[in-house]
Every structure is written in structure tokens, then in C-alpha cells.
Image 1 (cartoon, rainbow, N blue to C red):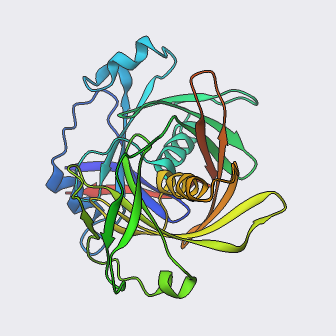
Image 2 (image 1 turned 180 degrees about the vertical axis):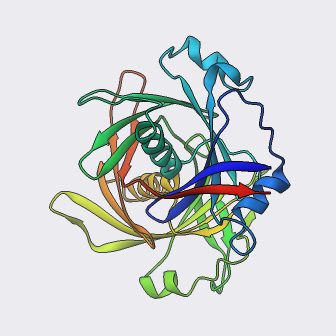
Length: 289
């Protein structure tokens, strides 16, 4: 099996990109996991499969909502499992569509992309792309999180941004640095479909020149610790805003792979959250599996 691929990343969250316009490739979880393996494969946190929305039984119905959403971001975790959304991945996906001529994005326009979490609108920025993640929801119950490096379990706030998250606030950067995230954090109660778990520390002072700041590390379900998680960055900012009750709508979140901006804003159907950051394509090649 010879497959053309491109490697890309958004703040260090890296992906293998494969074109499968008509949805006939049908890679198994094991094949995806092998390609994403960092020792025996290409190496990546996940895979972005470029598919025509109309050819996907999962999302073709979204064309009724947005006929211009020609492309479906079929996102797979490192272990091959399907995921609803990826905030860094969709920026890299947009970069790929534009650089290969599969889509166009003029000044002031948006690029709608189909995902398992619905249509997401991408716009170009000076430093990359911004994506409207849409509406979000806070979970009804508090979750206790136990992770390597923590002496006792800590309370976490559950949020859903199309995919599930649990956000844990830590006291200082020393606690953040001492985390051991090679194993999956334990959640009580257990999340049925798993969850991305974000650990955050507030900047001191929290707000500088009207923008709030956080530092974050994340363990992504189906992957492990990653250098960045786009929806996780948004979840972290939303959780801290909820705890602080300060109504702050502009955030900068520092992750090991760089920095991602977060903005909350009102719309007719309720508050939306958007993230912005860079997207890069690093190299292309042929996978001989």
C-alpha cells in the first residue's frame, strides 16, 4: 500500500494528512496507529483524512445546513479511533486545502469544514487561522481527577466542545511541571467515552492589557500527552472564566508547543468560543505500508 501523505502541525500538535476524496480508503485502526507511531511509522498525534462531505455517510447530512462545506475533516486519534473535532487539526486541515488548491479563502470570507461535531468556520489571520468552535456546555457534576505527580485527586470541571474535556486548576507552575502524563489520568466518575484532561495554572497577574493568561498541559484520549490541544485550550479558558466569574472573554493559553488565542463572543444562537493560532505543513512523502 503506497499512500501519499503530508505532515503538518499546529503549535506542535502534529498530524499525518491523507487524501481520500471519495471515502474508499477504509484504513483500519491498526493501520492508522502504525502510520502515527513515532518509532516505526511517520509519527503523529493523529491523522486528518481529506474526504468529500457528500461521500461520507457520517456527515453528508451537514450539506443541508451548509452546502459550501465541501470537505470533511475525518479526524482519527493516534490509536486509530474516531474523534469528533480537533481545534489544532482543523487549522492544519484548512492550510492543506488552501495550499493544494482544494479550497479558496479570500479576505473577509470563511471556509466551512464538516466535522463529526458539525460545521466549523475557519478564517485566515495574520499568524495562521481562527476557527469558530461553536457553542459549548459545562457538565452537571464535578469530576475528581487523579494523575501521576499529584499527591491527592483534584476536582475537575467537565465541558463539551463537540468532544469531552475535564479541566483541572493547579496551584503553581511547579505542580504543572511535575505532572507525569505518560499514563491516562483517572476520572471519578469514569467518562463513558473518555475525555481530554487539561491541567492549567493561572498567570500572575491573571489579566495583562485586557487579556487573561494561562499555562496548560494536556492528556488527550487515544493519544497521550501532546504539545497542544486546540479544543482543550478553549475548554481551559472557559473553565477558568467559569471559576473566576469575571466575564473575561479574551485569553492567551501557553502550551508546550506555543501559544493559542481564545475568544468568547455572543451570537444569535448563544455564546460561541473561537481559537486562533498557527498552522504549518512540514513535509510530504509516500508511505509504503
